[in-house]
Length: 333
Image (tube, rainbow, N blue to C red; front, side, top):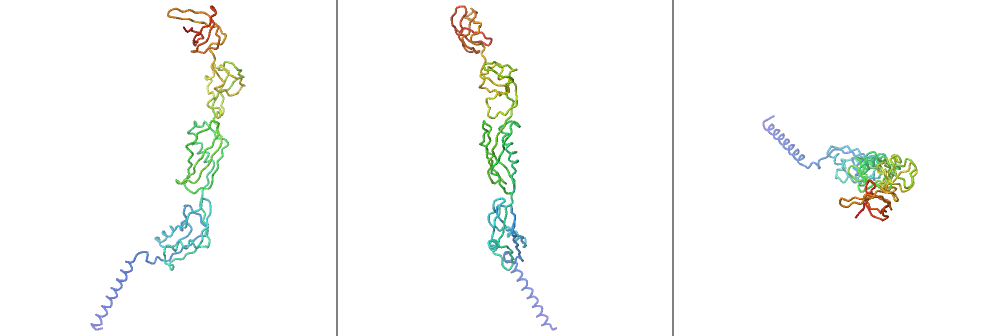
């Protein structure tokens, strides 16, 4: 080969190298999305169970694609999810249209989708026992620990709830009724979102030791500690009139006849008089250093610190005096 031929061949090789480099620079300078992503296959299942409040393609389809495109396709929004435990139908055409809206090359994507797709929202159940336990904790803020029970417990409004962290929030405006009837509302929250409202009803029972008659108590009888005793009873409907200590009734006068074992209440007693009507008492008249003591007949029941009318047995005159704790009447001048 002569020198001219060698020079010609060398120049051709250099031209080819330059052309190759220019093509490579052109290819790599184009936007990424314009590049061919590789073959994409989307296989949509006929039935799927999802957890999120929005139906995403990634939850109902198996996607084969390069990582970047797979992540974008998985986030394709197919609409709002059904309520927890419910099912929703999607048309295959709707799913296909949502995928095609991304603008991918039809030659690079293979969509396999049924004519009808059924999507169910995953759910969790709320055990009534859990509601009752939460109610007990809520009510403990009103009553002593273990000082009450809930009878005839009933809860309305329970339904399937979305999966997640479920909590109950009871109505803070609730106040216990005097007759023990219970009716309170509770909101159901899942992951910080309100999902429902419950109505809890029942009857509260609060057990306390209360004063009951140990024997039959006759009207007008002055009560001694031996006449009454303490017994555990349900005090709802009786508060605040129930008596919880024997000392509260000792020395009091019962105003009605009460059978043995019957609970006694505050309005069934009155204070026993220090001096009964018709009793002969000591009558004291005192002024300066002069003190005169005589006997008199009390004309009415007398109570310590209160004034009563007394008939002086010596003079027969009626006088007014103050009753002392020991049953003496001091004449008021």
